[in-house]
Length: 132
Image (cartoon, rainbow, N blue to C red):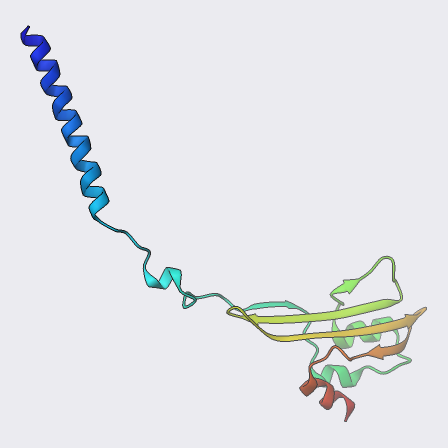
């Protein structure tokens, strides 16, 4: 009989501890620090692609070879297998969650010779400098 009372006492004690733990846990509240929930958390700058400066853009002219263009601007970001006569220089800069700069320069070739330059994807500031 004593064993039964001992088992009941342990089970009652276990139940009491669990109940108190649940009650205490429900009284408190937990929230994430504001630095983790707001937009103030650090997000690194993301630069993708080839930045083409005004000086670089001014060095290329129709009639140049592919090798000369590659020397002036670097290897293009996109060399499409289906459009082998076209090179795309694409650049994006995101700071935080904002897109600060996006540009696209497209070059068209016939054989090994540059025939057309589409710089309409350059930003207004850069396009103005390139057309001067």
